[in-house]
Length: 307
Length: 252
Picture 1 (cartoon, rainbow over the protein chains, first blue to last red):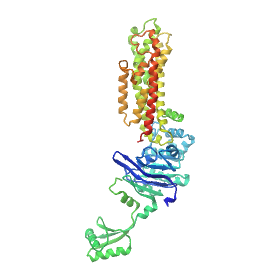
Picture 2: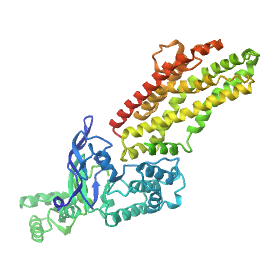
Picture 3: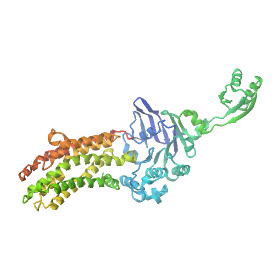
Picture 4: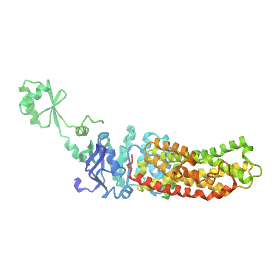
Protein backbone atom coordinates (compact mmCIF):
# COMPACT_ATOMS: atom_id res chain seq x y z
CA UNK A 1 0.00 0.00 0.00
CA UNK A 2 2.80 2.38 0.89
CA UNK A 3 4.61 1.66 -2.35
CA UNK A 4 1.57 2.92 -4.23
CA UNK A 5 1.33 6.15 -2.25
CA UNK A 6 3.44 9.16 -3.01
CA UNK A 7 6.06 9.76 -0.32
CA UNK A 8 6.45 13.32 0.91
CA UNK A 9 9.52 12.34 2.95
CA UNK A 10 11.89 9.68 1.72
CA UNK A 11 15.28 8.94 3.21
CA UNK A 12 17.85 6.50 1.84
CA UNK A 13 20.35 4.93 4.22
CA UNK A 14 20.32 8.17 6.19
CA UNK A 15 23.00 8.02 8.91
CA UNK A 16 24.61 10.32 11.39
CA UNK A 17 27.63 9.53 13.50
CA UNK A 18 28.94 11.65 16.36
CA UNK A 19 32.51 10.52 16.94
CA UNK A 20 32.21 6.78 17.37
CA UNK A 21 28.51 6.84 18.29
CA UNK A 22 26.07 6.20 15.47
CA UNK A 23 22.89 8.08 16.37
CA UNK A 24 20.99 7.31 13.17
CA UNK A 25 21.92 4.19 11.26
CA UNK A 26 20.86 3.57 7.66
CA UNK A 27 17.36 4.95 7.97
CA UNK A 28 14.96 4.36 5.07
CA UNK A 29 11.99 6.42 6.13
CA UNK A 30 8.87 6.86 3.96
CA UNK A 31 6.17 9.28 4.97
CA UNK A 32 3.14 9.07 2.64
CA UNK A 33 1.48 12.32 1.57
CA UNK A 34 -1.66 13.10 3.56
CA UNK A 35 -0.71 10.84 6.45
CA UNK A 36 -0.20 11.53 10.10
CA UNK A 37 3.06 9.73 10.63
CA UNK A 38 3.93 8.86 14.20
CA UNK A 39 7.72 8.67 14.52
CA UNK A 40 8.30 6.69 17.66
CA UNK A 41 11.20 5.62 19.77
CA UNK A 42 12.60 5.88 23.27
CA UNK A 43 14.55 8.97 24.29
CA UNK A 44 17.92 8.96 22.57
CA UNK A 45 16.75 6.62 19.79
CA UNK A 46 17.70 9.13 17.08
CA UNK A 47 14.35 10.85 16.46
CA UNK A 48 15.54 14.41 16.95
CA UNK A 49 18.73 13.86 14.96
CA UNK A 50 16.62 12.46 12.11
CA UNK A 51 14.27 15.45 12.25
CA UNK A 52 17.25 17.83 12.26
CA UNK A 53 18.64 16.09 9.19
CA UNK A 54 15.28 16.40 7.43
CA UNK A 55 15.41 20.15 8.07
CA UNK A 56 19.03 20.50 7.00
CA UNK A 57 20.04 21.63 10.50
CA UNK A 58 22.43 18.70 10.83
CA UNK A 59 24.31 17.16 7.92
CA UNK A 60 24.12 13.40 7.50
CA UNK A 61 27.37 11.45 7.57
CA UNK A 62 25.88 9.15 4.92
CA UNK A 63 22.70 8.72 2.91
CA UNK A 64 20.19 11.22 1.59
CA UNK A 65 16.95 12.81 2.69
CA UNK A 66 14.44 13.84 0.04
CA UNK A 67 11.38 15.93 0.84
CA UNK A 68 8.82 16.71 -1.86
CA UNK A 69 11.17 14.75 -4.13
CA UNK A 70 14.00 17.24 -3.53
CA UNK A 71 17.30 16.54 -1.80
CA UNK A 72 17.48 18.62 1.38
CA UNK A 73 21.22 19.19 0.99
CA UNK A 74 20.95 20.70 -2.48
CA UNK A 75 17.46 22.24 -2.36
CA UNK A 76 17.33 23.32 1.28
CA UNK A 77 15.43 26.57 0.78
CA UNK A 78 12.91 25.15 -1.70
CA UNK A 79 12.18 22.37 0.80
CA UNK A 80 12.00 24.63 3.84
CA UNK A 81 9.59 26.97 2.05
CA UNK A 82 7.05 24.13 1.95
CA UNK A 83 7.35 22.80 5.49
CA UNK A 84 6.87 24.05 9.01
CA UNK A 85 8.71 22.61 11.97
CA UNK A 86 8.87 22.55 15.72
CA UNK A 87 12.14 20.97 16.83
CA UNK A 88 12.32 19.71 20.39
CA UNK A 89 11.78 22.57 22.83
CA UNK A 90 9.97 25.61 21.38
CA UNK A 91 11.97 28.56 20.08
CA UNK A 92 11.00 32.11 20.98
CA UNK A 93 12.24 35.55 22.02
CA UNK A 94 11.22 35.69 25.70
CA UNK A 95 11.39 39.49 25.90
CA UNK A 96 8.96 39.94 23.01
CA UNK A 97 5.22 39.32 22.93
CA UNK A 98 3.63 36.36 21.16
CA UNK A 99 2.44 38.74 18.48
CA UNK A 100 5.91 40.23 18.01
CA UNK A 101 7.44 36.74 17.89
CA UNK A 102 5.17 35.58 15.09
CA UNK A 103 5.42 39.03 13.49
CA UNK A 104 9.17 38.50 13.11
CA UNK A 105 8.61 35.18 11.36
CA UNK A 106 5.87 36.69 9.17
CA UNK A 107 8.24 39.48 8.11
CA UNK A 108 11.01 37.01 7.32
CA UNK A 109 8.63 34.79 5.34
CA UNK A 110 7.03 37.76 3.58
CA UNK A 111 3.54 36.96 4.89
CA UNK A 112 0.67 39.39 5.48
CA UNK A 113 0.20 40.52 9.10
CA UNK A 114 -3.28 39.04 9.43
CA UNK A 115 -1.69 35.58 9.31
CA UNK A 116 -0.18 36.33 12.71
CA UNK A 117 -3.58 36.96 14.29
CA UNK A 118 -5.10 33.94 12.56
CA UNK A 119 -2.26 31.69 13.71
CA UNK A 120 -2.51 32.95 17.31
CA UNK A 121 -6.28 32.44 17.32
CA UNK A 122 -5.80 28.99 15.82
CA UNK A 123 -3.89 27.84 18.90
CA UNK A 124 -6.05 29.92 21.29
CA UNK A 125 -3.34 32.43 22.16
CA UNK A 126 -5.28 35.45 20.89
CA UNK A 127 -6.03 36.66 24.42
CA UNK A 128 -2.35 36.68 25.44
CA UNK A 129 -0.98 37.84 22.08
CA UNK A 130 0.41 41.04 23.59
CA UNK A 131 2.01 39.50 26.63
CA UNK A 132 5.71 38.67 26.82
CA UNK A 133 6.39 35.07 25.85
CA UNK A 134 8.77 34.71 28.80
CA UNK A 135 5.68 34.87 31.01
CA UNK A 136 3.85 32.13 29.05
CA UNK A 137 3.35 28.68 30.53
CA UNK A 138 5.21 25.81 28.88
CA UNK A 139 1.99 24.71 27.18
CA UNK A 140 1.46 28.20 25.77
CA UNK A 141 5.04 28.31 24.48
CA UNK A 142 4.52 24.93 22.86
CA UNK A 143 1.33 26.15 21.21
CA UNK A 144 3.13 29.28 20.04
CA UNK A 145 5.76 26.98 18.49
CA UNK A 146 3.05 25.08 16.64
CA UNK A 147 1.47 28.35 15.48
CA UNK A 148 4.91 29.43 14.24
CA UNK A 149 5.33 26.16 12.35
CA UNK A 150 1.93 26.58 10.65
CA UNK A 151 2.25 30.31 9.97
CA UNK A 152 3.01 29.99 6.25
CA UNK A 153 0.46 27.17 5.75
CA UNK A 154 3.01 24.49 4.90
CA UNK A 155 2.27 21.23 3.10
CA UNK A 156 4.28 19.29 5.64
CA UNK A 157 4.38 19.86 9.36
CA UNK A 158 7.25 18.30 11.31
CA UNK A 159 6.68 18.33 15.04
CA UNK A 160 9.33 16.89 17.32
CA UNK A 161 7.83 15.88 20.67
CA UNK A 162 5.12 18.57 20.49
CA UNK A 163 3.40 17.41 23.66
CA UNK A 164 6.53 17.39 25.83
CA UNK A 165 5.76 19.04 29.13
CA UNK A 166 2.08 19.54 28.41
CA UNK A 167 -0.71 18.65 30.82
CA UNK A 168 -3.37 16.12 29.73
CA UNK A 169 -5.72 18.87 28.54
CA UNK A 170 -2.93 20.42 26.47
CA UNK A 171 -2.02 17.04 24.99
CA UNK A 172 -5.64 16.43 24.08
CA UNK A 173 -5.90 19.85 22.45
CA UNK A 174 -2.81 19.38 20.30
CA UNK A 175 -3.97 15.91 19.33
CA UNK A 176 -7.32 17.32 18.17
CA UNK A 177 -5.56 20.07 16.22
CA UNK A 178 -3.22 17.61 14.49
CA UNK A 179 -6.03 15.20 13.70
CA UNK A 180 -7.92 17.93 11.83
CA UNK A 181 -4.99 19.04 9.68
CA UNK A 182 -4.81 16.46 6.87
CA UNK A 183 -8.55 16.61 6.17
CA UNK A 184 -9.06 20.36 6.60
CA UNK A 185 -5.88 21.74 5.11
CA UNK A 186 -4.30 18.86 3.23
CA UNK A 187 -1.27 18.93 5.51
CA UNK A 188 0.93 15.90 6.04
CA UNK A 189 2.07 15.62 9.64
CA UNK A 190 5.24 13.96 10.89
CA UNK A 191 5.04 13.87 14.67
CA UNK A 192 7.70 12.30 16.85
CA UNK A 193 7.09 10.99 20.31
CA UNK A 194 8.55 8.60 22.83
CA UNK A 195 5.05 7.49 23.80
CA UNK A 196 3.06 5.29 21.46
CA UNK A 197 -0.23 6.01 23.19
CA UNK A 198 0.28 9.69 22.46
CA UNK A 199 0.09 9.17 18.72
CA UNK A 200 -1.75 5.87 18.26
CA UNK A 201 -5.14 7.58 18.30
CA UNK A 202 -4.27 10.01 15.53
CA UNK A 203 -1.52 8.35 13.49
CA UNK A 204 -2.35 6.67 10.20
CA UNK A 205 1.23 5.43 9.87
CA UNK A 206 4.04 4.76 12.28
CA UNK A 207 7.78 4.37 12.19
CA UNK A 208 9.56 2.93 15.19
CA UNK A 209 13.22 3.73 15.69
CA UNK A 210 15.50 2.22 18.30
CA UNK A 211 19.26 2.77 18.68
CA UNK A 212 19.13 4.66 15.39
CA UNK A 213 17.66 1.73 13.49
CA UNK A 214 14.14 1.67 12.04
CA UNK A 215 12.46 -1.38 13.63
CA UNK A 216 9.11 -1.01 11.91
CA UNK A 217 7.38 1.32 9.54
CA UNK A 218 4.04 1.21 7.84
CA UNK A 219 0.40 1.66 8.24
CA UNK A 220 -0.74 1.47 11.83
CA UNK A 221 -3.09 -1.40 10.94
CA UNK A 222 -0.10 -3.40 9.76
CA UNK A 223 1.42 -2.85 13.19
CA UNK A 224 -1.81 -3.97 14.81
CA UNK A 225 -1.79 -7.11 12.64
CA UNK A 226 1.62 -7.91 14.09
CA UNK A 227 0.08 -7.91 17.52
CA UNK A 228 -0.64 -11.61 17.44
CA UNK A 229 -2.93 -13.13 20.01
CA UNK A 230 -1.50 -15.59 22.51
CA UNK A 231 -2.68 -17.91 25.23
CA UNK A 232 -1.74 -17.43 28.85
CA UNK A 233 -1.71 -20.61 30.93
CA UNK A 234 -1.94 -20.28 34.74
CA UNK A 235 -0.26 -23.29 36.36
CA UNK A 236 1.00 -24.37 39.79
CA UNK A 237 4.69 -24.56 38.85
CA UNK A 238 5.55 -22.70 35.69
CA UNK A 239 9.10 -24.04 35.34
CA UNK A 240 8.09 -27.66 35.75
CA UNK A 241 5.10 -27.10 33.47
CA UNK A 242 7.33 -25.59 30.77
CA UNK A 243 9.56 -28.67 30.96
CA UNK A 244 6.52 -30.96 30.68
CA UNK A 245 5.26 -29.08 27.63
CA UNK A 246 8.70 -29.20 26.09
CA UNK A 247 8.75 -32.98 26.48
CA UNK A 248 5.39 -33.06 24.69
CA UNK A 249 6.87 -30.96 21.86
CA UNK A 250 4.94 -27.79 22.73
CA UNK A 251 6.84 -24.48 22.91
CA UNK A 252 5.86 -22.14 25.73
CA UNK A 253 7.49 -19.08 27.24
CA UNK A 254 7.74 -18.18 30.90
CA UNK A 255 5.96 -15.00 31.92
CA UNK A 256 6.24 -14.60 35.67
CA UNK A 257 4.24 -17.39 37.31
CA UNK A 258 2.45 -18.15 34.05
CA UNK A 259 3.27 -19.75 30.74
CA UNK A 260 2.54 -18.14 27.40
CA UNK A 261 1.72 -20.07 24.22
CA UNK A 262 2.44 -18.03 21.08
CA UNK A 263 -1.00 -18.77 19.63
CA UNK A 264 -4.70 -18.32 20.34
CA UNK A 265 -5.64 -21.53 18.55
CA UNK A 266 -8.15 -23.46 20.65
CA UNK A 267 -6.89 -26.92 19.64
CA UNK A 268 -3.33 -25.97 20.55
CA UNK A 269 -4.51 -24.69 23.93
CA UNK A 270 -6.43 -27.90 24.55
CA UNK A 271 -3.36 -29.98 23.60
CA UNK A 272 -1.19 -28.06 26.01
CA UNK A 273 -3.78 -28.48 28.76
CA UNK A 274 -3.90 -32.21 28.14
CA UNK A 275 -0.12 -32.54 28.24
CA UNK A 276 0.06 -30.59 31.51
CA UNK A 277 -2.66 -32.63 33.22
CA UNK A 278 -1.04 -35.89 32.07
CA UNK A 279 2.26 -34.66 33.53
CA UNK A 280 0.52 -34.20 36.88
CA UNK A 281 0.45 -30.38 36.84
CA UNK A 282 -2.53 -28.30 37.98
CA UNK A 283 -3.93 -25.92 35.36
CA UNK A 284 -5.89 -23.04 36.89
CA UNK A 285 -6.82 -21.19 33.74
CA UNK A 286 -6.37 -20.73 30.02
CA UNK A 287 -6.91 -17.22 28.66
CA UNK A 288 -6.54 -15.72 25.20
CA UNK A 289 -4.77 -12.37 25.18
CA UNK A 290 -4.28 -9.85 22.42
CA UNK A 291 -1.38 -7.52 23.18
CA UNK A 292 -1.91 -3.80 22.88
CA UNK A 293 0.13 -1.68 20.51
CA UNK A 294 2.01 -0.47 23.54
CA UNK A 295 3.06 -4.06 24.34
CA UNK A 296 4.20 -4.45 20.76
CA UNK A 297 6.10 -1.20 20.87
CA UNK A 298 7.83 -2.32 24.05
CA UNK A 299 8.62 -5.67 22.41
CA UNK A 300 10.26 -3.82 19.52
CA UNK A 301 12.27 -1.38 21.57
CA UNK A 302 12.74 -3.56 24.64
CA UNK A 303 11.34 -2.77 28.04
CA UNK A 304 14.82 -1.94 29.28
CA UNK A 305 14.86 1.18 27.13
CA UNK A 306 14.07 4.39 28.92
CA UNK A 307 10.53 5.44 28.21
CA UNK B 1 17.96 40.86 3.70
CA UNK B 2 16.01 44.07 4.36
CA UNK B 3 13.41 42.01 6.24
CA UNK B 4 16.22 40.49 8.32
CA UNK B 5 17.54 43.94 9.24
CA UNK B 6 14.03 45.13 10.13
CA UNK B 7 13.48 42.22 12.50
CA UNK B 8 16.89 42.77 14.10
CA UNK B 9 15.62 46.19 15.21
CA UNK B 10 12.42 44.63 16.60
CA UNK B 11 14.42 42.03 18.52
CA UNK B 12 16.33 44.79 20.33
CA UNK B 13 13.14 46.07 21.97
CA UNK B 14 13.11 45.79 25.76
CA UNK B 15 16.71 44.49 25.86
CA UNK B 16 19.83 45.67 27.68
CA UNK B 17 21.35 46.78 24.40
CA UNK B 18 20.00 50.33 24.45
CA UNK B 19 20.77 51.12 28.13
CA UNK B 20 24.31 49.86 27.49
CA UNK B 21 24.60 51.96 24.34
CA UNK B 22 23.75 54.97 26.50
CA UNK B 23 26.02 53.89 29.34
CA UNK B 24 29.21 53.62 27.24
CA UNK B 25 29.29 57.20 25.87
CA UNK B 26 27.91 58.52 29.16
CA UNK B 27 30.80 56.91 31.03
CA UNK B 28 33.40 58.25 28.61
CA UNK B 29 32.04 61.81 28.69
CA UNK B 30 31.16 61.97 32.38
CA UNK B 31 34.54 60.67 33.56
CA UNK B 32 36.17 63.38 31.46
CA UNK B 33 33.77 65.91 32.97
CA UNK B 34 34.87 64.78 36.43
CA UNK B 35 38.52 65.07 35.42
CA UNK B 36 37.94 68.66 34.28
CA UNK B 37 35.96 69.56 37.38
CA UNK B 38 38.87 68.46 39.57
CA UNK B 39 41.72 69.86 37.42
CA UNK B 40 40.18 72.68 35.47
CA UNK B 41 43.08 75.08 35.98
CA UNK B 42 45.63 72.59 34.66
CA UNK B 43 43.57 71.51 31.66
CA UNK B 44 42.12 74.72 30.29
CA UNK B 45 44.51 77.42 29.09
CA UNK B 46 42.64 80.73 28.90
CA UNK B 47 42.46 82.03 25.35
CA UNK B 48 43.84 78.86 23.71
CA UNK B 49 40.52 77.62 22.27
CA UNK B 50 41.82 75.13 19.70
CA UNK B 51 44.43 73.61 22.01
CA UNK B 52 41.84 73.28 24.77
CA UNK B 53 39.47 71.44 22.45
CA UNK B 54 42.22 69.14 21.29
CA UNK B 55 43.19 68.35 24.86
CA UNK B 56 39.58 67.46 25.58
CA UNK B 57 39.55 65.19 22.53
CA UNK B 58 42.68 63.35 23.70
CA UNK B 59 41.02 62.86 27.09
CA UNK B 60 37.90 61.49 25.41
CA UNK B 61 40.02 59.28 23.17
CA UNK B 62 41.94 57.74 26.08
CA UNK B 63 38.65 56.36 27.45
CA UNK B 64 36.79 55.87 24.19
CA UNK B 65 39.25 53.35 22.75
CA UNK B 66 39.19 50.83 25.64
CA UNK B 67 35.45 51.37 26.11
CA UNK B 68 34.93 50.62 22.43
CA UNK B 69 36.97 47.41 22.75
CA UNK B 70 34.84 46.18 25.64
CA UNK B 71 31.66 47.53 24.04
CA UNK B 72 32.29 45.51 20.89
CA UNK B 73 32.57 42.31 22.94
CA UNK B 74 29.43 43.10 24.95
CA UNK B 75 27.32 44.09 21.94
CA UNK B 76 28.42 40.99 19.98
CA UNK B 77 27.56 38.76 22.96
CA UNK B 78 24.18 40.48 23.42
CA UNK B 79 23.06 40.28 19.79
CA UNK B 80 24.17 36.63 19.61
CA UNK B 81 22.54 35.96 23.00
CA UNK B 82 19.18 37.15 21.68
CA UNK B 83 19.05 34.01 19.53
CA UNK B 84 20.67 31.63 22.02
CA UNK B 85 18.45 32.51 24.96
CA UNK B 86 15.20 31.29 23.42
CA UNK B 87 16.90 28.65 21.21
CA UNK B 88 15.97 30.67 18.13
CA UNK B 89 18.91 29.64 15.91
CA UNK B 90 17.28 26.32 15.04
CA UNK B 91 13.99 28.04 14.21
CA UNK B 92 15.74 30.66 12.04
CA UNK B 93 17.88 28.04 10.31
CA UNK B 94 14.71 26.08 9.48
CA UNK B 95 13.37 29.09 7.55
CA UNK B 96 13.93 29.32 3.80
CA UNK B 97 16.69 31.92 4.20
CA UNK B 98 20.39 31.60 3.38
CA UNK B 99 22.43 31.08 6.54
CA UNK B 100 24.95 33.75 5.52
CA UNK B 101 22.18 36.35 5.51
CA UNK B 102 21.21 35.47 9.09
CA UNK B 103 24.85 35.99 10.05
CA UNK B 104 25.25 39.16 7.99
CA UNK B 105 22.17 40.64 9.67
CA UNK B 106 23.76 40.01 13.07
CA UNK B 107 26.98 41.69 11.93
CA UNK B 108 25.02 44.69 10.61
CA UNK B 109 22.99 44.84 13.83
CA UNK B 110 26.15 44.96 15.98
CA UNK B 111 27.66 47.64 13.72
CA UNK B 112 24.46 49.69 13.88
CA UNK B 113 24.30 49.58 17.67
CA UNK B 114 27.97 50.59 17.94
CA UNK B 115 27.43 53.40 15.41
CA UNK B 116 24.72 54.87 17.63
CA UNK B 117 27.05 54.67 20.65
CA UNK B 118 29.91 56.32 18.75
CA UNK B 119 27.66 59.11 17.49
CA UNK B 120 26.37 59.68 21.02
CA UNK B 121 29.94 59.97 22.23
CA UNK B 122 30.75 62.63 19.61
CA UNK B 123 27.65 64.62 20.58
CA UNK B 124 28.57 64.29 24.25
CA UNK B 125 32.11 65.52 23.54
CA UNK B 126 30.85 68.73 21.95
CA UNK B 127 28.31 69.25 24.73
CA UNK B 128 31.00 68.82 27.38
CA UNK B 129 33.36 71.23 25.62
CA UNK B 130 30.67 73.87 25.37
CA UNK B 131 29.70 73.38 29.02
CA UNK B 132 33.36 73.74 30.03
CA UNK B 133 33.47 77.03 28.14
CA UNK B 134 36.18 75.96 25.67
CA UNK B 135 34.88 78.55 23.27
CA UNK B 136 33.34 78.63 19.81
CA UNK B 137 36.33 77.14 17.96
CA UNK B 138 34.86 73.64 17.94
CA UNK B 139 37.16 71.42 15.83
CA UNK B 140 34.24 69.80 14.03
CA UNK B 141 36.36 67.65 11.73
CA UNK B 142 38.43 66.19 14.55
CA UNK B 143 35.31 65.57 16.67
CA UNK B 144 33.57 63.86 13.77
CA UNK B 145 36.60 61.73 12.93
CA UNK B 146 37.00 60.80 16.60
CA UNK B 147 33.44 59.50 16.41
CA UNK B 148 33.78 57.73 13.07
CA UNK B 149 37.35 56.51 12.65
CA UNK B 150 37.95 54.37 15.78
CA UNK B 151 34.46 52.93 15.19
CA UNK B 152 35.25 51.94 11.60
CA UNK B 153 38.69 50.64 12.57
CA UNK B 154 36.97 48.39 15.13
CA UNK B 155 35.10 46.40 12.40
CA UNK B 156 37.79 43.72 12.57
CA UNK B 157 37.14 43.33 16.31
CA UNK B 158 33.37 43.20 15.71
CA UNK B 159 33.87 40.38 13.19
CA UNK B 160 36.07 38.46 15.64
CA UNK B 161 33.82 38.90 18.68
CA UNK B 162 30.68 38.05 16.69
CA UNK B 163 32.29 34.86 15.39
CA UNK B 164 33.27 33.83 18.93
CA UNK B 165 29.83 34.67 20.35
CA UNK B 166 27.80 33.01 17.58
CA UNK B 167 29.93 30.01 16.62
CA UNK B 168 30.93 28.86 20.11
CA UNK B 169 28.21 27.60 22.39
CA UNK B 170 29.90 28.98 25.50
CA UNK B 171 30.45 32.72 25.84
CA UNK B 172 33.58 32.14 27.97
CA UNK B 173 36.00 32.51 25.05
CA UNK B 174 34.18 35.62 23.78
CA UNK B 175 34.37 37.24 27.23
CA UNK B 176 38.06 36.32 27.52
CA UNK B 177 38.71 37.84 24.10
CA UNK B 178 36.85 41.00 25.19
CA UNK B 179 39.07 41.38 28.25
CA UNK B 180 42.16 40.79 26.11
CA UNK B 181 40.91 43.44 23.65
CA UNK B 182 40.57 45.91 26.53
CA UNK B 183 44.13 45.31 27.71
CA UNK B 184 45.59 45.44 24.19
CA UNK B 185 43.76 48.66 23.35
CA UNK B 186 45.03 50.37 26.50
CA UNK B 187 48.56 49.36 25.56
CA UNK B 188 47.96 50.12 21.87
CA UNK B 189 50.86 52.52 21.29
CA UNK B 190 53.38 50.00 22.64
CA UNK B 191 52.17 47.14 20.42
CA UNK B 192 52.99 46.09 16.84
CA UNK B 193 50.89 48.22 14.50
CA UNK B 194 49.54 45.32 12.44
CA UNK B 195 47.52 43.93 15.38
CA UNK B 196 43.80 44.59 14.72
CA UNK B 197 43.33 45.48 18.40
CA UNK B 198 45.42 48.64 17.98
CA UNK B 199 43.59 49.89 14.86
CA UNK B 200 40.91 51.91 16.75
CA UNK B 201 43.57 53.68 18.84
CA UNK B 202 45.77 54.45 15.84
CA UNK B 203 42.83 55.46 13.64
CA UNK B 204 41.92 58.29 16.01
CA UNK B 205 42.62 61.82 14.76
CA UNK B 206 44.40 62.51 18.06
CA UNK B 207 46.47 59.31 18.02
CA UNK B 208 49.99 59.85 19.29
CA UNK B 209 49.58 63.52 20.19
CA UNK B 210 48.70 62.89 23.80
CA UNK B 211 49.72 64.23 26.32
CA UNK B 212 50.93 67.53 24.83
CA UNK B 213 48.45 68.44 22.13
CA UNK B 214 49.24 71.24 19.77
CA UNK B 215 47.10 72.55 16.92
CA UNK B 216 49.87 71.61 14.51
CA UNK B 217 49.23 67.97 15.29
CA UNK B 218 45.97 68.20 13.37
CA UNK B 219 48.10 68.04 10.26
CA UNK B 220 48.58 64.39 11.08
CA UNK B 221 44.85 63.87 10.72
CA UNK B 222 45.18 61.84 7.55
CA UNK B 223 47.56 59.24 8.98
CA UNK B 224 44.86 57.24 10.74
CA UNK B 225 42.91 56.43 7.59
CA UNK B 226 45.17 53.47 6.82
CA UNK B 227 43.99 51.86 10.06
CA UNK B 228 40.38 52.65 9.21
CA UNK B 229 40.78 50.95 5.83
CA UNK B 230 42.54 47.96 7.39
CA UNK B 231 39.87 47.62 10.09
CA UNK B 232 36.97 47.78 7.63
CA UNK B 233 38.60 45.41 5.13
CA UNK B 234 39.58 42.89 7.79
CA UNK B 235 36.14 43.23 9.41
CA UNK B 236 34.26 42.46 6.21
CA UNK B 237 36.61 39.59 5.38
CA UNK B 238 36.26 38.25 8.94
CA UNK B 239 32.47 38.48 8.79
CA UNK B 240 32.50 36.61 5.47
CA UNK B 241 34.58 33.82 7.02
CA UNK B 242 32.26 33.77 10.06
CA UNK B 243 29.19 33.53 7.82
CA UNK B 244 30.78 30.68 5.88
CA UNK B 245 31.58 28.78 9.10
CA UNK B 246 28.08 29.49 10.42
CA UNK B 247 26.56 27.99 7.26
CA UNK B 248 28.60 24.82 7.65
CA UNK B 249 27.94 24.43 11.36
CA UNK B 250 25.37 21.94 12.65
CA UNK B 251 22.57 23.72 14.50
CA UNK B 252 22.15 22.40 18.02
